[in-house]
Image (cartoon, rainbow, N blue to C red; front, side):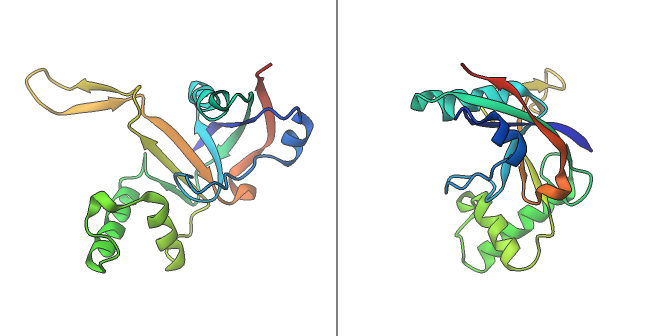
Amino acid sequence: MIVTGYHTLENKDNIDEVEMDGPFDCTHNGAWLGLGSYFWDTNIKWAHEWGRIGYNNKRKKYIICSCQLDLSKNCFDLVGNVQHQIDLMGCIDVMIKSKKIANAKEAIIPNLILFLKRKGLFPFHSIREADAHRGIMRVKFRGDREEYMIVNQRVQVCVIEKKTVILPPLKVVYIEE
């Protein structure tokens, strides 16, 4: 699967450098999926939302870059691959049984991924995940049932191996003035 990815960065008036050397890894300890370059999958609105939260709230301006991401090989796809979700749940079970965490509520995604990497069980070049942000919509299948479908999940891709996932060129598509 090939998707359009949007990468939000601080506007440092360095468009040429960004297009030549980007994307850049997220290195802060709050990175949701660990070390890698983060992209919003297909929906540029999420990239703008991150620009407002991550940069405008700190009185900085932002830019958005775009490129194609090849997720057809070696993607740990927690959105579209049920087996990968089962594998993640299995990792949580192992961590509970080994007393690394007390229960599933203590599981933290970047810690799980780091655990898998250290055990040599993570051959993936990218990770794709979705979260339940405030903009999701729950749509029922039937009015008399509790089951529903979640629509408009915010989907993010963490690129670990840029050479195998990113299809050049990376182009700046939005500049906040």
